[in-house]
Image 1: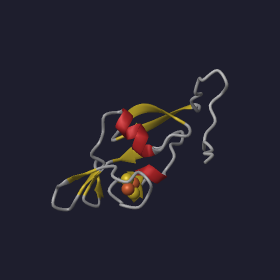
Image 2: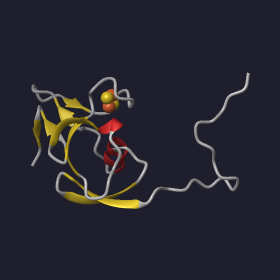
Image 3: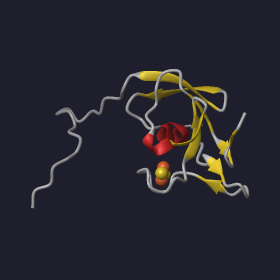
Image 4: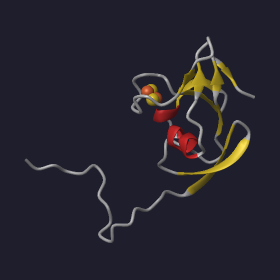
Length: 104
Ligand code: FES
C-alpha cells in the first residue's frame, strides 16, 4: 500500500515557518506564525484552558479538528470561535472565555 504525505518536507529536511505575526492574547502581545491555528498559538504560550463552562469547568483542545467545540475563544470580538479552526492573522485579538463571556 502506498501512502502520500499531506505536506512534503524540503529535501534538506528543514521545515520553514510562516511569516511572523503579532497578535494579542488576553491583552498580552505574542508572536505567532502564519499557518498556525489560534489553538496552537495559545498552547505555545502555555494556555491550555481556552474557555470554562458556565459552571466554571476548564475546557481546551480535545479533537483539534472542529468537532467538539471545547476550544471556544473570542476572536476580534466574535465570541465562541473555534480556536482549532481559526488561523492566526496579524493584529488578531484573542481572549479566552468564561462561559460565554470573554476575559478582559
Ligand atoms: S478542539 Fe474540538 S472543536 Fe476545537
